[in-house]
Length: 160
Image (cartoon, rainbow, N blue to C red):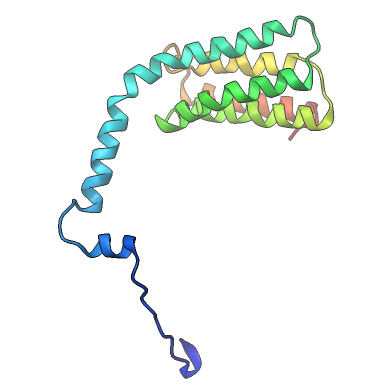
């Protein structure tokens, strides 16, 4: 501390502190490595679930029926997209993650601004299919272009 002020640390006994100082257990690095291995062991199963999550979004959007969508239906899409966002982020599919985040941002702004057009949501869903890890053949240049075009949609609907 500056200015000659002393800092006094008072250690209080509690259960967590006691457990931390007990012998045994594993090192933090080992625990993290084991956790990463366990997450990685789930990769195949959960990556196969990504297309079904996009299909669920398609089904909700198809249920809207017309060229207009209600705020309630958009919220339903956002709730479903959250699962897809968790999967893409957990397993490091950065492009899909960016597209889903763009979709969610757009949905939130549409609700806030009362925008009811279904088209921008459809375009985002098509982009999700383009970058889906199970089927994607998009290279880095095309990926940047996809994200750039999605940002134009946000700008057009003043949802940026």
